[in-house]
Length: 138
Image 1 (cartoon, rainbow, N blue to C red):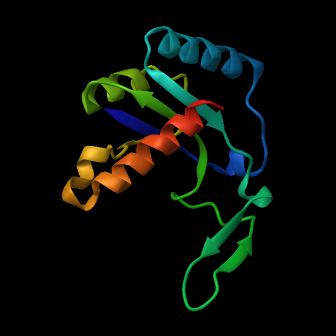
Image 2 (cartoon, rainbow, N blue to C red; image 1 turned 30 degrees about the vertical axis):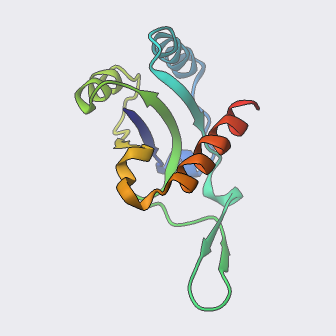
């Protein structure tokens, strides 16, 4: 199963405070361990919302709001995409992440094609496979 691990934003991440060399070193070791175990598929940190935008789809035309956005529990500072056998395995890995000081993450399972059942027609399934192959080539 694939999981997205969402790293929640904080006042520091939203202020653009960069992690210390010590934290970057520890995070590098953690990421290396996940990569060697075949768990880590991707992982990145995100710039603060002051450099981003939101698009809200309502009415005739999408509305765009530019950041910064108020610091709330729904802001994301980074993510990992991991491949594990279970939610428990994902939790075990993430307990080892070198976060301190009230950091918070959320782990969510990513949908797989079979999760959509009959709604994913053979044509849609073929399109999905073609797109995944195309993205995998980059």
